Length: 216
Image (cartoon, rainbow, N blue to C red; front, side):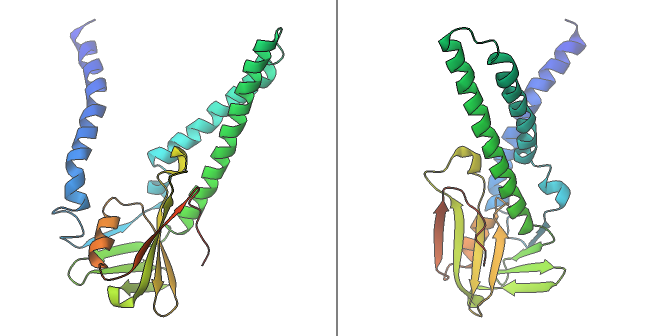
């Protein structure tokens, strides 16, 4: 192995590790530190490209053909080759696992579709000066402070939920005028900002086995 190959291998191994360490170091500053909406005004919009190129979504896309391939192997390779009972048990078990996993993938695609509907086309501004959340859409804008809110609900996965839905969560703002506003909890600093901005507002956590978007 020459020096160049050794350098490339070392870089390939250490770069992901270094990136993770960097993100962990930066997390406090962005979530609740000097670069967070607790200290400075932050505006963000999750674009279609950003949303559908997340690691979780790309992994889901990759996971589907892998399971289809496994299902195909069970149906057309393993099951036809069964000669004794324990081989049949293994093939049938594998078939059940792949079918169940594909069913979960379909459910996750449904979740992704629901969460994209409450995410797309929204520009969110978090302002610590007046502790407000402004939501801009193509239909207009809405500025929310503690005085406007009746209560906040945080819908999350529960203790009985599987790890596959652990990353899904959203907020529902119940306004005093009867309006309901949905906000995807897809930023690390968002829960900290809302907790600080709306200390006086009743907040309720609503756990779900699968955190579907509840229609208004």
